[in-house]
Image (cartoon, rainbow, N blue to C red; front, side, top):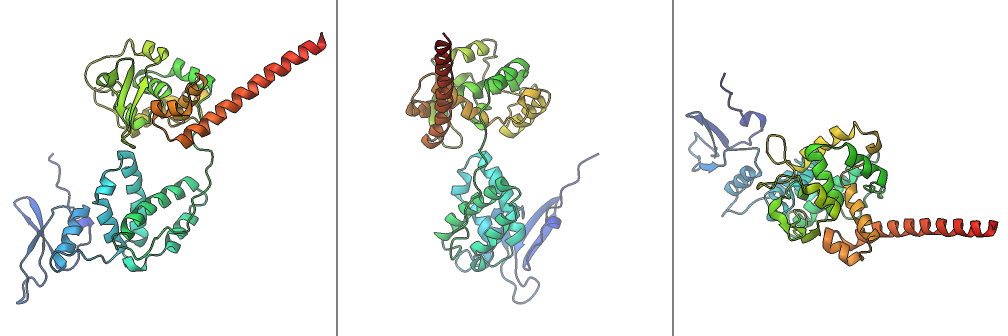
Amino acid sequence: MPLKRRKRAATVDLPKGVHHVKTGGREYFYWSPGRGTEHAAKPVRLPNDPTDPKFWIALREAQGVGGVVTIKTFGDVLDLYLDSPQFKSKSDDTRSLYLRQIKIARAGFGATPAEQMRASMIRGVVDGLADRPGAGNNFLGAMRAVSTWAVVRDHLVASITEGIDPYPSQGGHKPWTDPQIQAAQKHLKGAVRRGVFLMIYTGQRGSDVVRMGPTDVDENGLRLKQQKTKREVWCPIMPELAKEMEGWDRTPGPFVRQTSGRPFTRKLFSKHFDEQRKEIPALKGVTLHGLRATAVIRLRRAGLSTAQIQDVIGMSLAMIERYARFADRKASGQAAILRLSDAAQKFRR
């Protein structure tokens, strides 16, 4: 049975003056105010998908004078931001995150005149997410990006995030413990095992690990450009990782791939990891991103400096120092226990 063509126009409210035409099994949209009257203007062809921001940008250009885009609502601002180089240059994960937050903003304030947008309105949403501080911070971060971009282009009269503080950190993604790493190495299987090994020994994000392949091997390391930061890093292949990689297929493409041979997305890989993690009690509560901190701690224990760890992992110095201090304090505490134990034994003698 043939699939029915999706009726996109039926799901979008088209403004007066926009005409939807179906002919030859295709859909066309035109800006044609006054159509059928003596005041009808020459029709202007619009993009074919009214759910795409480009459709509404083209419409505003057609409605304007001399091609000047007229910004009327906050929804217009959001459309322009989504079509901007600043948004398109962000990583896939960041764009996906921002799109979810922009959907919330559009539902609440899309029809609000742009000049009436105020920080108090964004604060209301953030305050309403007090029981989910992570979600509140995600929304605030996306709106801050939109606001910063829009204010300097006169699309907003003032910042809509000024004075709004994010919720305090809840500790972030915790590094895995040695027993948790041992449990992962013992029980994880297939592509998930490969991906986790790469994360443990390189400290890279999931979005980079699912892209690593034989062509990234450079002497005794892995050379890659991080998707999020565009930073180029060289991660040494530690002996433990080298031993694990001995049996890996070296055909072109990513090391971590589905049974069908297709590559993973970061999100799909996380889903597959979660499915295996649920069957391993020792891994309850761990996150893949926590392996970034785990890698820092492992390198710190090996004696690398903060600057050296930054070269290997490509993480900010502030985050490295945070995790390294944790490792240093833990090592100092363990050394103190040994010294106190030795002192106690001498005292008993």
